[in-house]
Length: 175
Length: 230
Image (cartoon, rainbow over all chains, first blue to last red; front, side):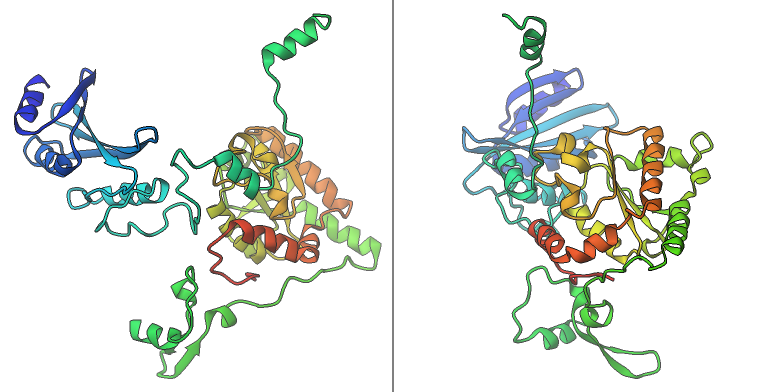
């Protein structure tokens, strides 16, 4: 693992290297060099298994974080590549040419976060939300509760009790 | 194929969600005859559902209701996690068959639709299509608290809260998830209701058709199917 990270640091401008587990490391790289790092890992370092691609919405910093996790089955090592993209124009280079299944992840991110991957096959087709016309629901400025109350006819009468308060009132009604 | 599509849709403003299989087209039949197909008019019945009143003879109607209650065929359509609870019913331990309950593979041969658990908008579209294809009399059972008030998905962006706004529900079974015993109790409750002549869900749907359609269309935004899918 150490040697691999040294090799990567020598070749690429990676930062924030955090070893989360013995065989799993997170590292950050800028948007421009992400795909070349992934290609390098796949073709030269034998990371042949694409585990997942997901996104995090850092609304305070006006950024989306994309996380690509790759796995090397020969030595059982995971590498997670984080890259930050702007929230104003969320667009990322597609990686579908490396693994076919990446296109599905990218299609999901397009729908759920509104991150565009130009050139990815079927990226504009609806994935789960058919005919969605609001802002993408996984963005943190999307208010799920408000949307539900306006759309789905909530049943009246739903109330919640704080358990501690409820038991206190029940056991010691006089305070 | 693309030429045909262009010819038929030119000059008409195209619906964004119009399904390509519903487009008008000309097809050459195996015997060489050229026929025009307009799927929305040819494949579907455009009429809204009609109310089927109970038989005038009460004794005969009660016999019919007995027969309906004793042979409930369940559409094998699992919409959510609750469908896992359905399969033990068919095993020797719970043996739903002794109550006259069995699974049916197609909507047109089944009389009971079980909405098993949470119902997303995408599934609701398929559920509406399947429900409307079922023949009268037909019953709907809401399984789990998700169909009653949304359950643990009550503030989800993509799951409905109340099933009775979209389909006429005959029985609810509370729980998350209800055990197979609760399901059997629910079946018995439904059978009792049918025998008392209260299983009028299909008529309720026909009477309030416009209200149900308005609710369904409010959330199914890509309504690229006919209004009534008989």
